[in-house]
Image (cartoon, rainbow, N blue to C red; front, top):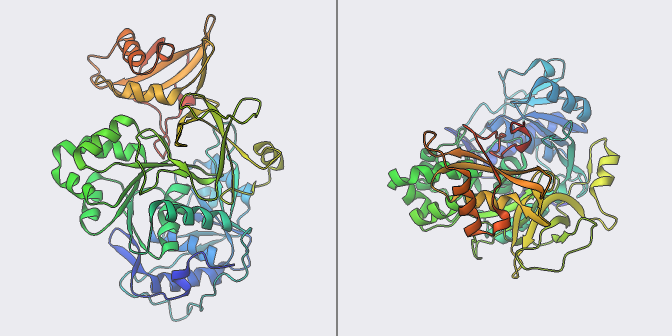
Length: 494
């Protein structure tokens, strides 16, 4: 088993590995700090990490991985019931947290170990009474051993812990390095939370596997993005909400436009980036945002390549090592790559999780007999293989008038209307059509909202008449989760 982080074991030096605000660690400093954590947790099966956007979280996770111990990142915004479920399900030996970090009552009776990163200058010195051990290249950890247990959002019940093996982390990060031409010279900037795959695996472990650097903003702001890109950062990771804020700020901020135009790679993920925001950013900066597609259970499946066409509304082609197919409701693979025929995405490859922790029933139900994972995401494929996500099977596939319609493309069309600030699309029962399309809209001007006929004509002209909304619901805001995804199950009913 080769190391997940060769730069820590081969030649740790004075290059900056991590920077959070004005605090930083070099590779030598990270090797020492994470080595101290590894010595503390070695032999445990799992440890929880209180995943605040801090150096301590990154060091804690890396230390656990160096020790061959699975890390369970905990969302600091989780409620008591959710935290108690995750702790009871994962049974961590202890909780890693920053010194002085106040933990909720649900964690009060758990053994705690502080992650001590007390010197954040150019060189890290371990406390004299606890010298950092020499690092070994994770010799006792195998490719199939658990690296992380990441809990899903639990929209249909209590969160499930997806067990991600070390090979999945390595395979995804190496496939992205191929697709994005990601090297040790790259400096990544982002402001993503560290309890999700996007911010933690891609945003922290990704740069460390390459031997590069990550600068975490703490709290995302367009001004922070501009500062870091002007200061040498080459890549930006964000979610659609962040890119929307960037698009809104660009007209009045030529410095932001200049900084973005100098970036090597702008990447959006965790939800679909509206085409309107794609085009606004491209027009102002000359740079196109690329999208990729993944899940907690699969890590990354597809991406637009750095040397490929950044086609708005698509998530590119399957990554190296990933098999992807679209299937009918009965599981029959689709053969039509026509950009119109909708099917469920199923994937197979080394990027997949191994199981839902303590849930053999759910694990078995998630896979087909031939080893493909049922994602529950619906998509179409263009003739050249590009994948376009049209929504979730449970909430975004609308069967209306004999057609299978994805909500995502209607949402994109609605967002192109000047009177629409935010939009979501769902289906609801209809005696004639089976389901009718409902548009949930946040108006750009609350005092002059668009009407149903206006929006229906707008969508019909861009897509097809059968895809037009048949009902309109106006809202002040759409419910969203921490990653900016619209929570359609939280939309008001009745």
